[in-house]
Every structure is written in structure tokens, then in C-alpha cells.
Amino acid sequence: MDIVELRKLEDELHRQALECILKTVEVSNSPDYPPSVIEYQLQTHYTMDWIRKQMQSRHFIVTLIEGKVVGTGSLDGDEIKAVFVDPSYQRRGVGRAMMEELEGYARTMGLKEVTLKSSITAYDFYQRLDYRLVEKLSEEFQGDRVVTYLMKKRL
Image (cartoon, rainbow, N blue to C red):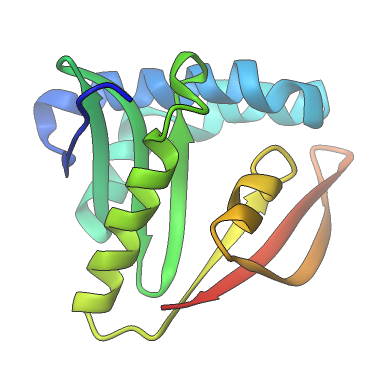
């Protein structure tokens, strides 16, 4: 694996973090979700305003390789959210390193368990990290059925 730097998201990295998220949604999530859902995420949901707002309310980290943001993740209370790894860097340990960092931070906050909502795309990844299925969720969104998985892990 390349040399990875994990650090708290800072203002100068907002744009890179957003680009990483958008690329991941477009490339990695597109095969698993309807076009209307992907388009909503790319055009409406994940924006600079969204990322700035999340940075204020969560412990939000980025993963850098050679100064480039290649992953994002956050802890909001006891829930891990916004975990994205640039498709060019998937299966290289970036996601695992980021999850270990977020879980470690959760432990320092006194948490004994964390939850997350997994996409179809990331479900197997989280299972390999010992997250267990709590409930399969199916919601109507943008006129389509969207599946996510509520998962948890004891720390």
C-alpha cells in the first residue's frame, strides 16, 4: 500500500474531498443504484455546502496519498457516515485504514458500538471488517426502491 495520511478534513481540502465523493458515487455506486438516485446524489445531495455543514457537525476525516484526497469518512455520534474511497484506490487498504481510524476515535469518545448504513456496493467490505447486519432497509426514493443495510460493530 502507498503511504497514507489520515487527518481531519480542513477547509483547503473541501473541493478535493467532494471530488472524491462524486467520483466514487459515479463510478462505484452506479452499477448498484437506479440512474435517478445517482443523479440526485451527484447534482443535489453532495455539494460544497453539504460538505462544509458536515465538517461542522461531525468528526470528518480524509485520507491522502501524495497530497491527494483518496478517501473520506466521518463519525456522527455513534454512526459512521460518508465513507468513500476513490475507485482508483479501492482494494488497496485505504478504506480499512480509514475505518480503523474512525473506530479508534469512537473508542476515545467512550463508544462501545458503532452503526452505519451501508450501500449495496460496500456491504461485503463492511462484513469483512466484522460489521453485522441489523436490518435490510428498502425505501422509496426518487420514484425508485433503494436498498441500504443497517449494520453495527462492537468496539
